[in-house]
Image (cartoon, rainbow, N blue to C red; front, side, top):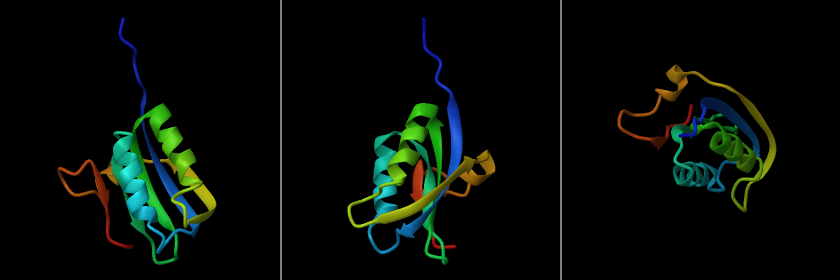
Length: 103
């Protein structure tokens, strides 16, 4: 009897000291290790945003990990909301997880 795994898509906006500390590279590396799809990018307001798609437990754990980030980061808040396939499709075709240009 096979297990069914719920696939979800979530958007996370991360605030704090999250630019210039390797946060995007850390997110991309960690998401790829978790076999998630999506993207991450800096925003001009100093925050980082990301979209994660995959098994619900992996996405949930990824967002929990975002509350800490890499060693030099200081995360003050993570706003996590449901996302759409349209948001997921902002990444370049053929890339499972992408680092996008600053918006």
